[in-house]
Length: 325
Image (cartoon, rainbow, N blue to C red):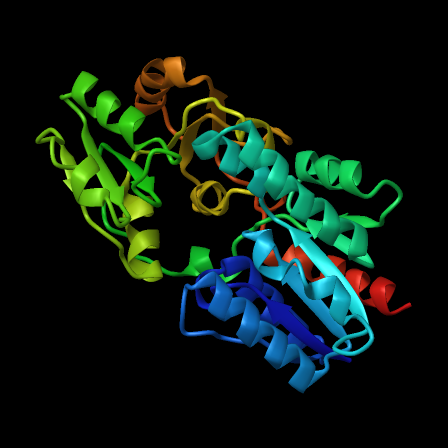
């Protein structure tokens, strides 16, 4: 079977890269187009040309922004035979937060179009499964969580831990940078590490307090080392329309934190499964939860407490067996 994995920025799409590695290990011939541009019109044109040239048996589309690929169902037969729609993020809901309900309606029309056209849908958690089902009732949908590879826990160092609070991720409003900086101002006696960046990171961090260390983007091995050294890991999001769809099964960094045996305090997300060392609170409870976590040790992890991508291998295999029939 010849498979084409499609995303507008595949080199930055962790989920696609893990699917690619798994499919190659399973023996599938796998093609991943890379476009060298972020222009939506250019990506759409190039993707269409590549599909018609490669003629894969299966196209696996990793969504957001879905409008780029609204033409994809029309290529069934001439360009490919089966379509898998990976519904990894509610693009319409994300758009509503910036541009209002009219924009959400437009975006969700494209989501519905692709969900209805797909032979099978994959997704990252139960809430997104239910949303995809609302677009395409009766469609077969498989949940494949965003769990990190086991190798992530094997890198890093064993330096002595420090009483620091660490945040790893994009420095932006959606990830809760304002809540994080407010927390740091209220807890001047604690050190906060920010590992990550973004196009407007300089703007958000221009007034950070002295107890905040902005470390920028770091290599994956360095991230693991920093997380190991920190006392508490946080996800400081605010509650909004995305909260329902952001769960412990879909957030990469949350599972990286937990797999390293760290205490995690998370706000603005939904808990699907009770996890050891994970405390989910409302954003106005963040400070109290962090203070309490700083005063205790994480629970010892058992093998059953870890969540690794390797658990998804059989799930991925089943998806491709089912779609090919």
